[in-house]
Amino acid sequence: MTDRHDIDGVPGGPDTPHDGGGAGAPPWWVFHDSGLEPSGERDAPRIPPPPPWRVFEDAGTPLPPPGAAPAGRRRLGSPGGGTLDRSVVEMVNVALHVRRPLLVTGRPGTGKSSLAYRIAAELGLGPVLSWPVVSRTTLKDGLYDYDAIGRVQDTPPPVGGAAEDRVLPDLGRYLTLGPLGTALLPWTRPRVLLVDELDKSDIDLPNDLLHVFEEGEFRIRELERHRQRSVVKVMTADHTDTVPVENGHVRCHEFPVVVITSNGEREFPPAFRRRCLEIRMPDPDEERLTAMVTAHFGGDRGEGARALIREFLDHSREHGGLATDQLLNTVHMLSNGAAKSDETSWARLRDALWHALGTESPT
Image (cartoon, rainbow, N blue to C red; front, side, top):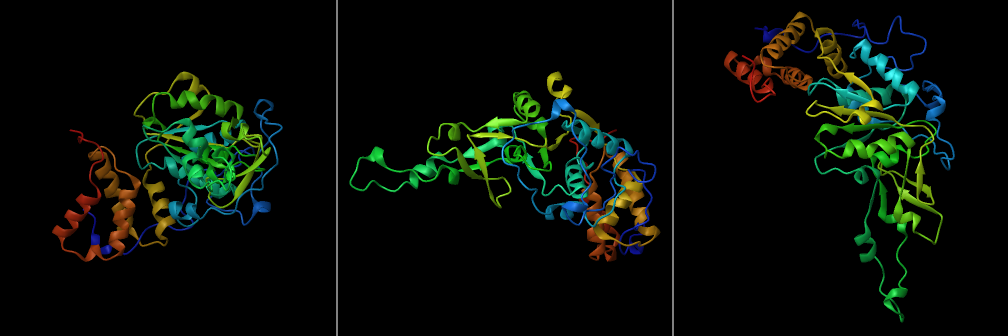
C-alpha cells in the first residue's frame, strides 16, 4: 500500500526520460512527440510533399489555416513529450508522408483520441475536428447538414403575389459542414480529423468512407441544384467563420491527417483496412504515466507519487486494465487533501476511482 500521506503532488519533471521521437530520430520524421508547440505558422514544421497518387488538384480557392487549438492544452496538459511509444511516433510519420488515415486501436484510456490532439499541437495544424461516431451515424453526418425546414420557416410571406413566387433566404445560411466535410476543404495546411470510435458505427459506414478517403472530395447536392449563384458561403464545423464552396463541390488541397480510433469491438472490411495504417496503442508503463501526470500537474513530488503509479499499474494488471484518466483523477483528489483522510476513507475512495472497466474481473 502506498503511503498516502507522503503524496503532496506528482512526480516527474522536464527532464523525464522517454523513447519517443527525441534523440536518434530519423531525419525523415516530422512529428517527434516533443510536446513543443510552434509559436505561429512560420515556425510550424514543414509537412512533406505527398506521393503523386495523393496529390489533389483543382481544389478551388485555397484557405488559410485556422488559429491555435485551445482544446489541445486541456486534453494534453502543459507542453511535454515522451508519452508515446516510438513505434507509434514512427507510424504517425509514415501517415504524414503517404497521406493515409491512421486506424488506432487499444484499450480505453490508452491515449487513442489524444493522439490526434498531440499531432495537431506539435505540427501547428489548428483545432482538431472531432467526429464522434455512434450506431446511427451516417457518412452525410460527417460531411454536411442542411436545415431545409428552418429555411422554409424563415421564408417571408408573399406580398401581393403567389406563394410560389416567394424568395427563399440565402441557402448558405442553412448549410453547415460536418467535421469530415470541413477537413476536406482546400486548406493550405492539412487539418486534423478525429473519427472517434468507428467500431460503434453501422456496418456500412467504413465502406461508405472509402471513396471520400480515396478521392478527397464530395458534393453538396443542394448547392449543385442552386442556380442563382455558383459560389455559396457555408459555415464550417469550427463555427467560427464561413467559407466559399464553388458549384457544390468540395475537394481538399492537402489530405487531412485522419486519426480513426477503435476499441476493437469489431473487425473492419479488408478494403477499408487496406487504405489505413494501423497502430496498436500499448498500455502506458511507469515512465509514460509519469510523463502524463507531470504534463497535467507539473513538478517533482518524490517517491510517494511514483509509488502511487506503481500501485496503480499493479491494480490495473490484477483487475483487467484501468484507464489513464483513473490515475489522473486519483492524483487530483490527493492534491485536494484526500491523502489526509483516514485509512478506510482512502481505501473506499481508491476503490471507487480504480473500478474495473470490464464486466468481469480476471480470475
